[in-house]
Length: 431
Image 1 (cartoon, one colour):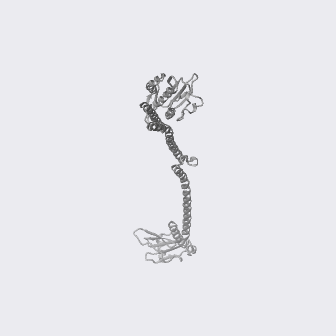
Image 2 (image 1 turned 180 degrees about the vertical axis):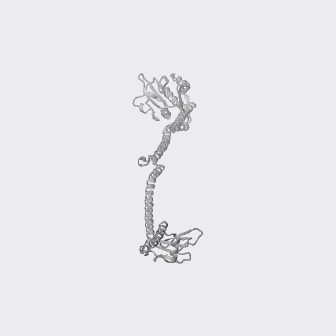
Image 3 (image 1 turned 90 degrees about the horizontal axis):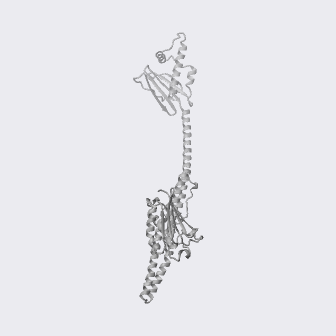
């Protein structure tokens, strides 16, 4: 606006000087500013009608002008000039200028060192109205953007929180005892779906741990009930009346056998529980599988000889990385099972690529085909033709399978064509 006022002032004075030059047309010379100011001060300059009309009226956008000398005497002034105009003070420079806004007017005041003060102003109501309109538009846009942002944020936050609430509710239900409940990640974003899958895996492991704990408690109570009952019955029988020393000795021998069975059963249950708790090997170290087999065979050979059985070894070097103690328990259970249930035992160890194959076979009566799918289940006992009426716990093969699985391997059993059973252990992984 100030640039516009400066242009209006410049055009007014130029037009006024041109009109004076036109009146003095005979001289045909340009009018100097000093001479123009002198003519203004003498009162001999009047604006033409067209120029005066441009500075008339008080409506929106109307302009006014006032020219005075340094003594504040009016030299030329439009009829619509207000009475509260402010002129620039006289300064040291050739031109001293100020501008201000009064109500709905904008004024530009300049004082020339040549002896003239000029104020030009304009009603700026149209500009103020446009500013108010623009301000209203911007405020409206801002409010709309704020409202849209608020609603969008509410919607986005609700959508973002909803899966978290689903996860929280599911976790609460699981904590309340519903161990089978799981989070559905299908309707979630990738990140939350991955988190849900991790939580589901954790819940699976927790559920499996609780299941193992319940299974261990149920197995222990079920398998220990019979020997404890027999032990109590035998001790009560011995306490009812006097017996001979031989009878007492026989009764104590029976109690000792039952206690030994209970000890073996509890140890087997603890080994099985510890192995089933391992989602990965706690200890991994390189060892020679053939040396573990040889050591176990040497330990069990006296027991085999007592029963008239032999253990034959055919072992190749087989380097493996895992838990040698657990592999020793596995081999012990396989050879011990063959000694107890079969005939002469043969153990072989071979490497095939990055795999190790161990076979423990016997030439005993074999296992009925109907029993083969279940012999690795805990407490499963094959009929008397294979077991010979032995009172084994039925946990040895279950422990062997669990150890094999923990090592990323597998174990299976099959009847041999000429009689007997072969247990094949396959170990994979780092060597």
